[in-house]
Length: 295
Image (cartoon, rainbow, N blue to C red; front, side):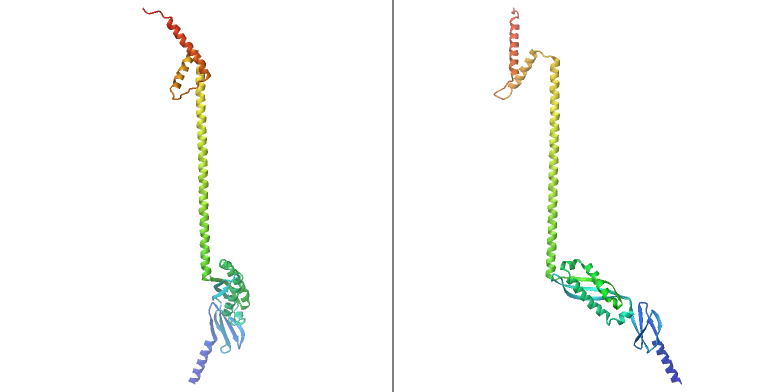
């Protein structure tokens, strides 16, 4: 009897261990009863029939597939090395378990094929500058293709696009030449602006200098005109006699004779004044002859 009890207890222990299945929060359980799908198990402790039910667990967390580097030919026949990563999440554990044998391998090959097709439609420059566009298009293609597998492709990221060494060197030289060109253009523009500003400054300075000279000459002329007008008014107001004018002419002639010129041109008025001077001389002579002799 003891042996029988032992056998019964052992059978109950084995039955209980196989009848209770613990499903973790990020998992779903698939129950197959005698080879046929029976039901889904939610997270927690679940009861199944040992030796009759078979349980398969499916991870529902977001996962990553690393697409290894591969050689891809661009539209302009340049070979580049490209690798990527795929982020996906299972949305239907039934489809991912029964609609595809090996989802990760299938998704990897699908990504490699679509990556070659997508980059093959672009030239090298477009490939290097359109990484975000390639990511979006690849994600859309993979998401549409894997929808029947119960998987949602959340995003695709291109990790590396590496052209051949000679192409990279040529691109570096091209970039350096373009930067040198822009630097030379900026220098030329700077010199041009400096020359324009200098010419405008000189122009403004010359204009202001000419304006200053003009104003100065106007003021001098106005001053001389006012002085002449004052002298003229003073002379006419004083009503000078012919004798006084003759004396002034003689003073002016003395100043003229002090110069170094060998020829002196006298105006007609000066010649007339000389007659007055001669008349004054005669007057002095007559006055002297009328004086009484000294005793």
